Length: 476
Image (cartoon, rainbow, N blue to C red; front, side, top):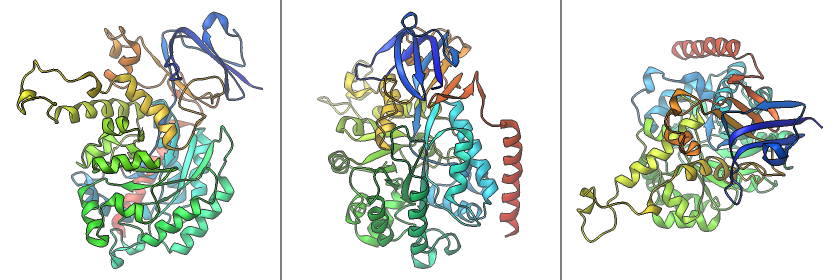
């Protein structure tokens, strides 16, 4: 069995049940599985692959619970720079529908490369526009080429403008074809076993782009297969709430409940505009939520109640969201921003006390439990994300779990003066790139450089495909 030794880390953050943080520690793996963790002197000193982590911090791989990889092709387009969600979507739909399979492949390589370079080892991609020859097959093959652990959706849109939906009719599919192809790709690619590198998710796009019948049929289909999840956007904007109230007489969460979507194995992207009762409902039924801070700020959607979710026991993770509503695929940036946004949301709420003016006094401190800590947000990005997507074999560094981890060089300008607490420095200070990223024992990022594909060539080809896509869209 191929072996790997990550040795002599200054700090090794386990995220195990005891929240151990080991100093001068090593990790030894065989065949992609962690076999030993502990003081460097007590572990094997040789392996097929040896990574010297002197001066580095070793962390569990980050889990990205919501992304749209094809959107790397449409970053920063002028027509969508200053819009909220619905107008932003309308500026993009037809362009996404014109994406070629080769452009799609390149977008996955670019997005996953960015993620790996920011410490992400597992990504869920919510693809839902399958036109112009695009297919799930192309996306999965590209993810395998790069080497990242991949959860892939066979997403869908079926409700066009002529029937009261948001997307143009030319961008939607017939529901029978959607369900048939979804079943095909589950049978072809879904891996249920521990350590699976590829899993499938059934993921209709949103309440305003599919019918209630497709939502019900999608839920029924997913539940026929062990480990196939259910995912959609929900409660992202007030516009969405107006849509479900107007069309169905229900708030978004009530609507999803009416079509059989509240339960274990389901998670929702964004989940911003929820009340306390809906949060409690998520917790009681096992639904997860994916917080997407950059995108929510970019589109002025709002701030998700992350701390309230955590306190209520809701499974919650982080997501980059689309590269056209974020314009980046950097998971450490999402960790940093989610941490700051939770504190901002705290500051926007007056503290409990005898006077509603007490929050004006700097001498009135917040209670300790109200603050989100650096370690809490790292746990959301690792163990939390693993729980959201239904994995118990990733998210922490423990014997018997997958060897998915990344390291950051602590001796950088950005951390100068911050090493009183190296773990917290990775969150408080400016987000840093990974020095090493390892997925199932395979080195994907080697000393800060992508090791599995020719990245400069991919970027050149991707940029050409992006410009061609925009030219075609203008001609169309």
